[in-house]
Length: 188
Image 1 (cartoon, helix red, strand yellow):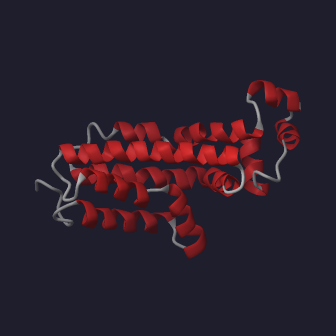
Image 2 (tube, one colour; image 1 turned 180 degrees about the horizontal axis):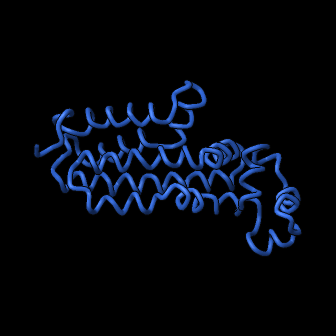
Image 3 (tube, one colour; image 1 turned 90 degrees about the vertical axis):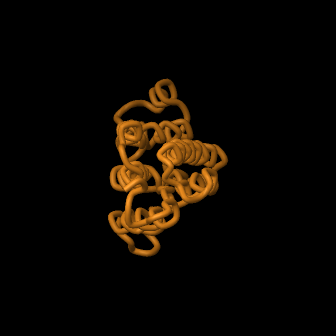
């Protein structure tokens, strides 16, 4: 997986062959097929690698114990910040390849599904806290749009924003869009 990640980031998905991955990993191509599967399967497994390396599960677990709405919202903002910092290479490789490869488009859709599911949990937690000033469905869409790591990568690559600046801007935007009183946590 490390060899594939490095080659996908350096050369792109389309320009990388299983033989090159095998060579970089110092195994035979058949070992790659037997242990992991196709090139598309390798990048599909990278979704799990992203979650693990970015500590998404650990962050999401904090939702249950967060005691104010801002803390809940900050958890959601920390996820794309960590993913971009630790796994931006994977995000960029999968996004680039997903535009032209149907198998990889499915991988990207799985990443989007995971992201949307997480945003649904965050919005539900905010609703339980009576923190939302907008309907739950609108909150889910707002969280999903503003914390999409692919969009964050575009802001970094195309507009020159660094990830901490993106996180700060998204956090401020979410406060204004989600909460009735943006400068104070609901209930304070």
